[in-house]
Image (cartoon, rainbow, N blue to C red; front, side, top):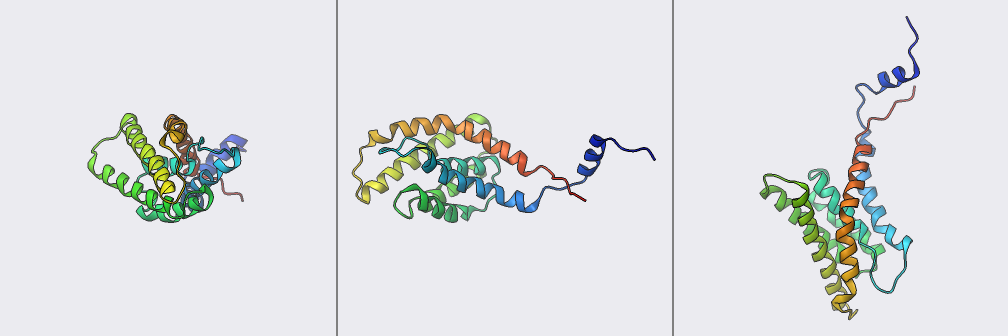
Length: 182
């Protein structure tokens, strides 16, 4: 029997392999949690400038793979985001859960989807999320004017396609069958 080359051996090991269940199930949750923590690492500012990356990642995962996370996923992920975002506790829990419900309703009502539709839905949800976060913060005693969040809204809306591409790349990694070492 002839010896197989290194590439043929690798290809034969990948045939009929399934993706790791642990990786496939946990990677979306971990990337969203990492997105919630990341804005605090990059910049500390007196006004919100960086986009809410955790929310953008949550939105991108829900739009890319609608049935991947349960509808109640906004609750635990929102709790985690509330711990790191500096918003009043419960803000992300409420708004992420509402976002998940809205996306479920839109998914059930729209018979077709394309990039423009997804981006318009995302723009509406991003703007509503940031404005409602400001409103809840003002109710809690912040007293910040609406013009303070304009840069954050613009940066968030423009960075959403990049976040969507990153989530699609992570999704490809998530579904890649890994080699079983023998």
